[in-house]
Image (cartoon, rainbow, N blue to C red; front, side):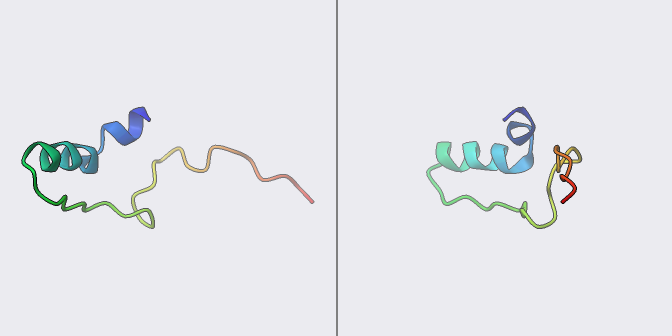
Length: 45
């Protein structure tokens, strides 16, 4: 939650709400994942 709240899309979401306009999100889940993702280790099968 902390990481997501510090990103540009969080700022844009708040501003668009306050300005009563549709948001213009620039981030993408495909390219803007946090540096700590993935945070788990894959189990060996």
